[in-house]
Length: 274
Ligand code: 8Y7
Picture 1 (spheres, protein in one colour):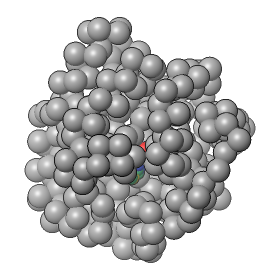
Picture 2 (cartoon, protein in one colour):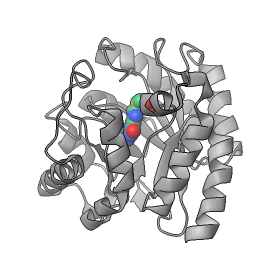
Picture 3 (spheres, helix red, strand yellow):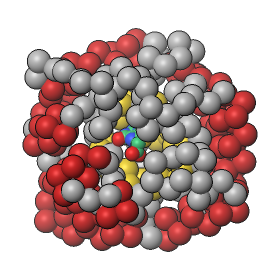
């Protein structure tokens, strides 16, 4: 996959995307990386540990989080996108659903747009992506971050999410996004109960029918906390278990906070299943 000149060799191995939150209220790294130097150090560490992508986000998508303006989001992410792009040989994704933030982040050196609304958040997003050679992650979410955990219901969660992603892929392609630059993601935890998340993972291989690279983000999420009865700081092993399972059932990219543990698990799982 070629994203604005940067090559991501998919299929041969699983790629690990390290999470770089630049929000004062993000749910597991609260306020730790607001400082740009600290953020760069954290990105460097993740790359040293084996991350081949860094996902930079300036707005918390935690359930119930309050929205931030484009200006505030840009103030948070742009300096860091620039620094990471200059200093590190890594694929940068910008976690935003705002077209203006995406456009400026791509200009500053990002390669992929990670849109958790799958182009529902901003009508201008699709043309920003189509007008560049950026990659696009289409993630499924039911509702909005504020409302998504209010008793989500599905007829068949896997079929519903598959159908929704398929429709979003068709829309993106019809609007000019290159088919080979689209990545899909079922959006673990976004408008899903613990049972829904487990069902999505159990039947993950059904997403292969969409013929797109598959990204999975389970890192430290509540369903792991619910099953293990552990707080967010104690979910690494649970996360690793889901990562190995996801790779064995078709994931191409995994999005995680704890890069070292998950890279080791990924290399081992790749040796067993690829
Ligand atoms: C995901 C994500 C988050 C995910 C993609 C968290 C931004 C919540 N989760 N993007 N973002 N997939 N593509 O717990 O699962 O990290 S934020």
